Length: 204
Length: 365
Image 1 (cartoon, rainbow over the protein chains, first blue to last red):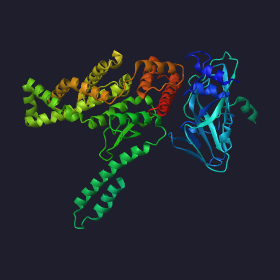
Image 2: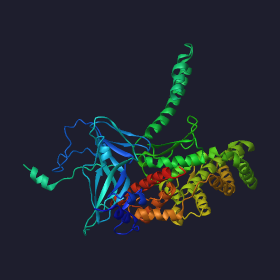
Image 3: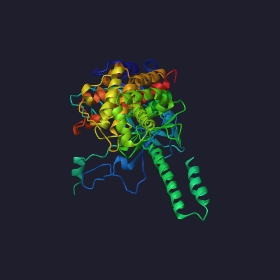
């Protein structure tokens, strides 16, 4: 796991350096070193995606074939929201919303990471990120899964410190980065992909 | 405000009509009310669409700051979209909403940040009014017009014979035409000053290949481009000479007198250098910055690395860098280039948001 100094060093590498870590807006170098933590705090962005109530019995999370594929898309299943700085998004008890980090991250081939919530928020019932892995070469804003597991509505604000990312050294592979242009600034909700093994297991 | 006015028409006015009034008069009043209602529905629709999430809301902050800088700190901005493929359909300050500047993009491209330099043109219309350019230029245009008419008395005779108007009426009509043309040129110069080369690129993208039917209230398509390029030269903006190379000339609409239009064109051409000087002077006095070449280059480097720019560039610098990147990549219009094109938009919008973040944290914010 990278120390505070190692994180700061990775951020300070020249643009174009193969091991450079990018976090935009960039955290304050002196504060990062002084804090001496092994993580970078990230802030909440301004775009959210909430789920619509639906008449469908269930939404399939695994797809065996394209036959009978549920054609509802992230556009039809969800609703986007933009919250300006200084305004709040109220997350009610038991509700779930997708958010995104304000920061755009770009990991080099030799780094991977994990996102976790902050205990100070978790103690109020705000649970952040349950699928936390960030792969090498990731580029974009992190989609955050935000759930209110508490008993009172919670007001969350764009720009507030909301989660942290821990970084690990990884032995770089030789595979080509296929997600070179996949970075997004809004929370994304990918559709389930057709899984051949699952498909064969599901055959009659 | 709208409710009050509609109440006046629908309740106070209609209910107060005497029963003896003829059906014809009642029909006329109803038609007038219908027209008023339709006028409001357009504006209300525009305001409603301003909340649609297809809009690039990140652009609101820098555009609002520009409006405050060049029009008034109290001016308010509504960014929205239109279903017609015509950007910015409420360019001028509406009488209905005197303190508001309404900027609209075509709905299909309301999230396309590359198109936003054209907002500079529309904000220019509000600046034209706020700075009362019409009054400032009226004497110069009148003099230029008199020169143009004196220089070609045969044309004057032809126009007077065709239109049946007196010389004074002719001068007034042509003066109005020339001033409207100058307003459009002013708005182009305004957009060019603020947005740099990206204004020319967005203009070319949106209006290519020129041609079409010419309204007398606009310069011809090639003359307009010529004025824009003269402005670019004066501002030392690097625009590729071939950008408008295949631009076609527009043709005057039927019913427009060619000699009268020629008088207006000549007056416009004579006043243009002085108007350009005044335009740039106004913007300099308001401390409006032009895009910095070295910052644009740094942003392009960031875009090539697939990361947003982090040093607090201006919106025009970011969109100029986006255009230069796009053109260097050949336009990214093939299907195979779609992912890169979308990523470019995301990186520009994130860079604009990061610039807002930096501006809000600045000591003088």
